[in-house]
Length: 110
Image (cartoon, rainbow, N blue to C red; front, top):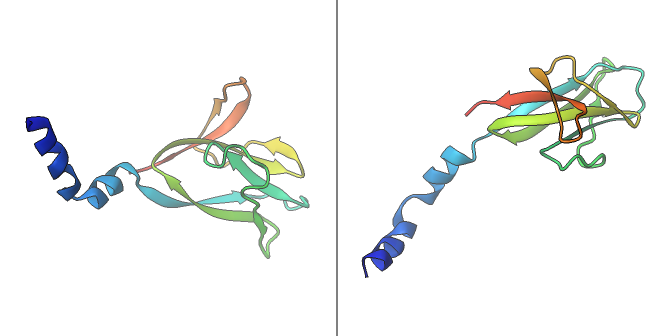
């Protein structure tokens, strides 16, 4: 009986507040400065490493840019420059994926 009272009261708490603490999302800017590239995409754990999920846009100075909303925590990613994976020289760090390949890493704050 006591358990059902707890369940009945749970939805009355503020789920939006709880959600905002655990699912903090911040806009993150990615810049790739390979100006000779014909196509650049961003691949990472936030888009299941899908090459078509996050194409970058060429800027007037020739650099490539993309802003993505990412959840707080660590994210692994790479640039896909004309189909070839490339580390981000501006990354906060380099780590290895499950295949042992080097990937760029960033940490998004809470």
